[in-house]
Amino acid sequence: MGLLEDKALVEAALFVSGRPLSLNELSKALGIKSLDYLEKLIELIAAEYAERKSAIEVVKVLGDKFVMQVKQEYSQKVIHLMPKPDLRTGELKTLALIAYLQPIEQSKIIKLRGSQAYEHIKKLMEMGLIYAEPHEKTKLLGTTQKFAELYGFPENDPMVIKEAFRKVVHAEYTDIIEKLESEGSDGTEAGAEADKNDEVEESS
Image 1 (spheres, rainbow, N blue to C red):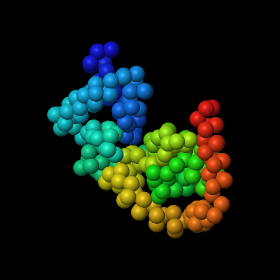
Image 2 (cartoon, rainbow, N blue to C red):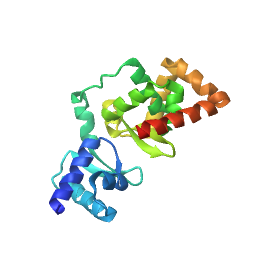
Image 3 (cartoon, one colour):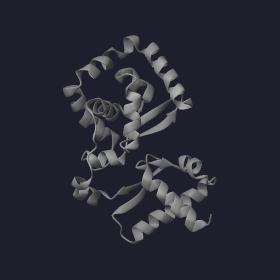
Image 4 (cartoon, rainbow, N blue to C red):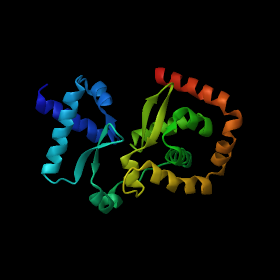
């Protein structure tokens, strides 16, 4: 493909992902091998949005990742138009725990929430509310910009979100708090089992 087609492909990837993407992730997903070329494409896309003073921006976040998002000065004005996620109580518990502990290993979430959390995590990822990155034998989970916008945070700042959800988790989810407090005493074996299950999930 030529420059215009490659640029359009990268723009589409940033749009649909709903979360920050690294150059390596984009390279693997799109089949574009040169990371320098990918970064140049992203710079072109970002410049085009900036030039036309769009409400959308493409920015570098979390050190080495890129995300397409609504500018902060607009996001708070249109937040009420975004569809609210239709989540069941169990899914909300899992989401609250991820928000509170992020970045958190998936195996630890499974240990705290049980095997049903695999389905919760899958749905939350499909909705663009959390991201999952490969991390040793498991995955590392955290919230996305879409999550921040839906729940009224000015930006996807993990420290601000963690503090807000600390109050939610401690106030409403005493069962989770009890597991967190007892994690050090018998968590090793359960954690190893969750890691093993994660490997099975990856290969299936």
